[in-house]
Image (cartoon, rainbow, N blue to C red):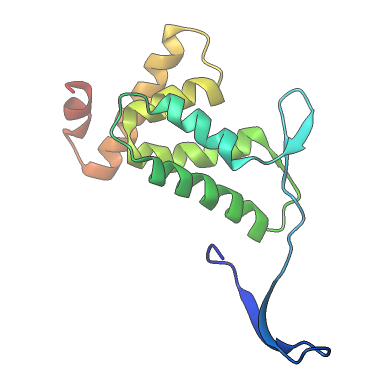
Length: 148
């Protein structure tokens, strides 16, 4: 049951006396995504995975990792009790996780989430990525990143 907490019960049919098992789980209200234009639609993990697949074309990221990422994002917002989530919040959360999986996919996905309109937007994002890498890995890491 996908890591959900469920209650298992053994029961007996009152008519035929056969025993059977039932599983009960808490049904969460559907998560609704509020798009940039104000429209609302149910969260669809498969749409998120499709976007991630586009961002990871020619990258070595297994589909299973992308599916897990989408499930984790959905689970995070549901556990927080959110009924509505801005698409931008979902995008930023995905970017945090995607940066660790593949930097090229991260920049591709960021270009959509952050609506890049020029080369300067890409250069700025690469500079932020290099700076973040330097903070995480120490001095000299940004040269290694830019020389790839």
